[in-house]
Length: 292
Ligand code: COA
Ligand code: MG
Image 1 (tube, rainbow, N blue to C red):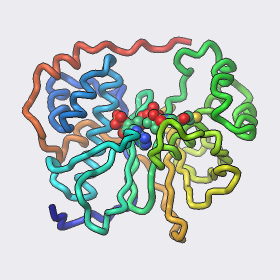
Image 2: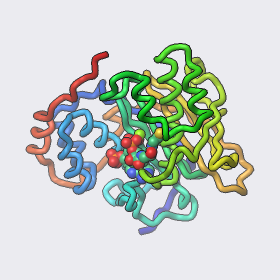
Image 3: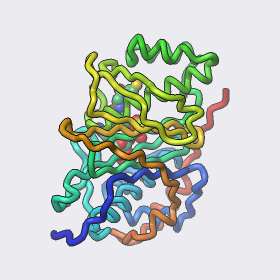
Image 4: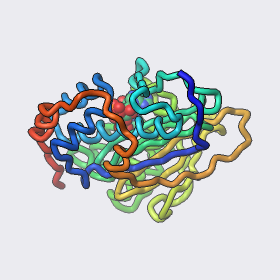
């Protein structure tokens, strides 16, 4: 197909709060009509409401962003997944946005998306909460010891309280995941090869900072930029890999909080309404909350 107009865009950052979203049967049916059948089926299999909601929002975010940026009619957008699971656009794009890169992440109460025309992008979000199933923080750190370098552990352990240490741990975790997700490699990449040198105080930044750098196998990786944000007790990292020849500095893109209505605003149903699918969602269990 031909795409006649391409929006001028370099960066999009969106965040959605799933805790504040309690979809009705009608909402869920409408949402399910806007995602591809295989995704609708995959989302239908989640046991807990929370997981289904997060994944659904991620898909709606992708479709809205792709429609907005590429101007491809909503119903014609076709997403595939690489063999490692990373979603990609199957439609052919004009030269102007051929470099479009995008990624979503969900954890806790947050679903986030980053899209870029000038860089490869990966995003990760983590809620700053006690890790599920951990006996204690030190026990948890022990099980994760192989994922971080000596210097990274020094940084984590330099926190005065367990809460501070956990905050630093999640900060590094998100950075590592965002890097791995930008490459699209998934499980199998040895994240200890990455040594993050955090710059700036994220807790008191009050916005997005991009002062952190990374060494890969001991070598400084100069073509990578990391945007870090704290949003509603969630830590977000966006990894941006620019071509080595690029001299242009990327602008920091702040997060825009979007709603379900925003997500559906330009949507078009891809399938007939499925009432049973909506009712099955309402029957799903709430995930047990963690008390500590
Ligand atoms: N690369 C990039 N993005 C991917 C991906 C991949 N290989 N596979 C899936 N995604 C996208 C999808 O949109 C997915 O959401 P969906 O399935 O609902 O569509 C979303 O990213 C999942 O990201 P997130 O919510 O952050 O989940 P996660 O942190 O559990 O998973 C993966 C991220 C997919 C990369 C993860 O499975 C993984 O492989 N991690 C290993 C890296 C590691 O060792 N980390 C330790 C850090 S200390
Ligand atoms: Mg993640």
